[in-house]
Image (cartoon, one colour):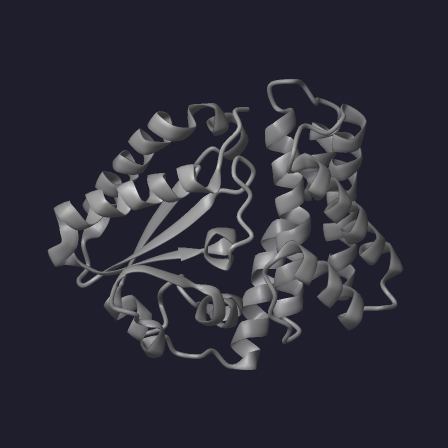
Length: 258
C-alpha cells in the first residue's frame, strides 16, 4: 500500500464533484460526504469516502451507472493499490428530493438521522437537511435492530476467514473486522439514543452507556489500539486473526442484548 495524504483524497473528491457538476448540474440538487471524510477523522489509505448525490427528479439507474464509472476511473488514477482493501475507495450513491421528503431515502434514515444532521458535509449545491423527516424513537430503534440482525447473519463468515488469512486478503479482512466492530457498536448505541461516529467516541460512549458489559468494552478498547497501529502499517497475522475472532464474539454478544 502506498503512502497517501488527505490532500490526495480531497483532490480526488473535488475532481469527481467537478465531473458530476459539469455533466449533470441541472439534474442535481446537492452532493454530500458522510462518514469519516465528513467528520474530519479520515485516515488516508485506511478509510474510504462515502459520497451522496441528491437528484432533483428520479433518474433511474443510468445516472448511478455514469457516476459509478467516473468514480472507478478516479480510483484507478489515484488509488489503484487500495482496491484490494476497500473494493470501492470512492463510494457514490444517489437519492432524490422526493425520496428524502417522503422518508424513503437512505440519507438520514432511521438510526442514521442524527449523525447525518450533525456531521453530514455539504460539498456542493443546496442543503436539504431541513426537509429530512426526523424519525420517531421507535422507528430509529427498529431500524438499528434490523441492521444489526443482518450483521449478525454474516458472523459465520468470520470464523471461516480466521483460518484462511493470506497476504492477498489480510488487509481487506483487517479492515472488514474493524468496520464490523465499530459500526455495529455505533448502531447499537444509536438504537439506545446515543449518537456518535468516530472510533474514540464510540469506545467512550459504549463504556459510559454499558459499563457492565466488560467483555464488549474490552474488545472495543483492544480494537481501538489495533486501529491506531494499523493506521501506520500492517499488523501481524496473529493480531489480524485475533481481531477477526473478536469481531465474531462482539456481534454475537451484542445479539444477546437486543
